[in-house]
Image 1 (spheres, one colour):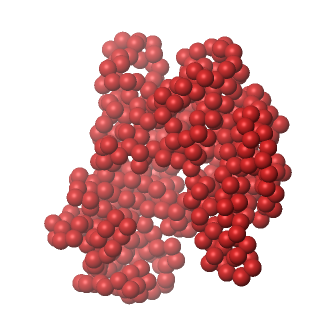
Image 2 (tube, one colour):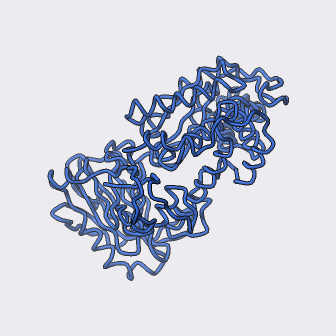
Length: 499
């Protein structure tokens, strides 16, 4: 949760939405051509290379703004760019001007935008275990650009929607045009399995040409899938790994990537992936891990914000999640606590009026009362509300932090269960307090540190040094790509999260 109110309350939109917005004005010059990377005909005639460059350049600053900006480490940025440029030079579209950027985001992700703009997050870099694995990610995204997959999807969507866009323009109906835009945006949100496999084939080709071990692509994919399973377990939703997986929109499996490695032609790499491990670990030593201080920290049952200088605690059994739009805690029986900030606070100090007339306008409220929370004016109301996930009983709590800031808690339970959580929710509300300057200054971000395994070290002993309250061994194994049962050897270098 970041300090800028417009970001706190706004959802980060997929970059495809910006791509669509920037590209709708591109003239539709339909046509098929043989793609030099894939050798097959593809419909990409509505976007020229100049159009691609313009779209990428227009969207680059928007993407930086939406995904935390570029990570502030010039040496790391230069390192990623060096790897990317080597791979791009060995691609089937080497004349594209490629731009590689590490985003300051803890989320494990990577994506490409037309015009040669390729992005990886620091969260992804923390999970990779050698340079070849990072190169595998970059080469896969280069493959999408070389195959012009985004262009294919966009041009096909434009062709499908051409009649609707024309109707909107002819009638002046913004609603019709907006409906067409939404339809195309949905179409653009994910690559097909065939496109992903094609990009894997190309990525493996570029890896081998550049001297990397092509098998690193499948080993890192396996690590990312294990990370998704762990995220689902941490969220109390084992078996729901797909909901925490970037491969919802990147449909890939380890066996398909291994099939791509087997089918791809090209010379064998000069060095195995293990040979690129030590240099890579040196590069990521000290990289920021998890939430940025500007977005606040999760520490066990507490959420603390060193910039905005507040904290609160959620009940035992709830697990906290932080995002740019809100802090969310999920608990037993599908109970939820959501915390955010009013995007356009009014000057009124009457929190009852704020809930009734602004936040919950049109909602049938009950028991709307004025209260005080640690000396701050607040109001609490109760309602039964409908959401996409069903009906809930809700507490709506608004707190006047200062003249310009209102913070909000939305506390949800299944119908009829709000009474069972009343005491726990009240404890959370009363835990909401300001931090002193010294308390805020004492909060430390988490970093990734590279340590050397000693003679008496084990997975368990090293995992115990990480600042997590649970799942330490599982986190350590996923972070270091260690399967269950794998032991450590003295002299081996591993990643630890430290404060």
